[in-house]
Length: 314
Image 1 (cartoon, rainbow, N blue to C red):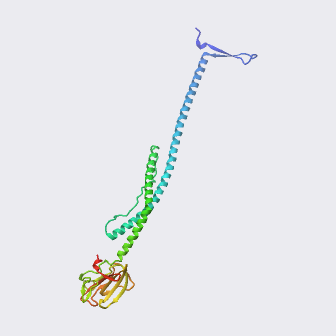
Image 2: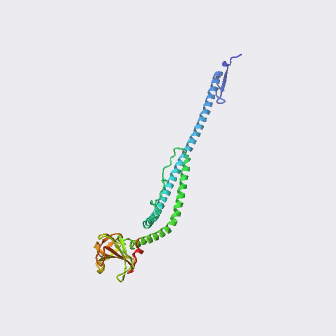
Image 3: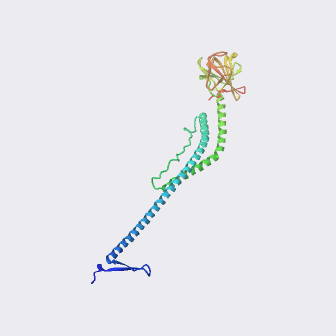
């Protein structure tokens, strides 16, 4: 049997009809070697192409993921800008409402000053949460949608509530302004109404009693000489000095038709034209004029008509 390793193949190479035939002798071993090299080259090419395809696929996936993250980051930036705009809008509306609430607070304080009860112990304040905090992308980028969506919903709810309040606020403000003006007028009236006791001591003679053939026009309060005499209401001093049987006397006009008289004084601490506040010391108790002992003769006149002081004093 002929050894296969010694076998060979002859290739005849003819370029044209007139050219010389060339012979190329290829042994079996060389042909097998060439075949193996060809197979290796083909396999390497297939592996290389496959690796390139897989690499390209992974690269496309990474690019798509980066584009998704970039989109979410841009979405976050836009939404945060929207959140900031909404927050500033809400802050502006909140400040407007705070001004209205200040009116409520002032009115409430006035009521408590007058009545001594009711109202709120603390100031009225509008509290706003910090909605401008940053949102991190350290975890799953999909979570940004939930965070922003929740905050947008909260801001929209707050904004709708503020719009509703601001719609009602002008009418409320007008009502409160009228109430405040009425309350201030009432406070002014009460401050100028003679209801503060002009001194302290024993009541020795009441309004309307008949004395020495005359009707007593005031209230007599007895105490020691030098006891303080107070203005029963705020007003302007229109008379100071000696007045016959009244002795040393002060007359104060309070407005609203009210006038008060303080007689039989020992000292006078005010002058005509002085403005006095309710509770100011205007003089001291004495025994001047026709008096049976140290006391204050106190009168309240309404539209120049004497009235019973006990109907006013609190």
